Length: 191
Image (cartoon, rainbow, N blue to C red; front, top):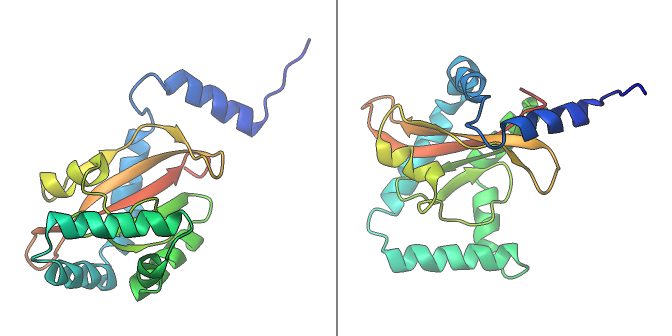
């Protein structure tokens, strides 16, 4: 009997063989960050949007962060979407949507966070507003300039595609100080 593998079956086999190990695609993902993504991540629009939100939230309390996160989650679940709409309508979110569209076979999502782990802009709606309790922020912004965290291989529930999250600290090019972080969903098919 002759077996043939479709591209999807091949990716599934690759995923299954690596799922119990470290992310074997990490070198290629990190190379993409250095060779391609840093050029658009350092766009002044992104830097300015993060710095503006950092100023706005300089004195935000943990209780206020929790309240904003609850408001966001309620909107995701069919409630009031005012907070979600306000973030998605920002010019920086439009910019990220355009970057994702330019790399349609590669990027599954893009979002940037401020120095508290709150969403600043995004290409798609995230499940929550506060990322500060997750590795994508804790292993980047909290670690300082130059920190990169590459997530495990996972299947995107909405698309069925296998992906990994590329997470990196964003720095102010004038001072070299960490100001926020970015998460980019990388499709293994597109990589």
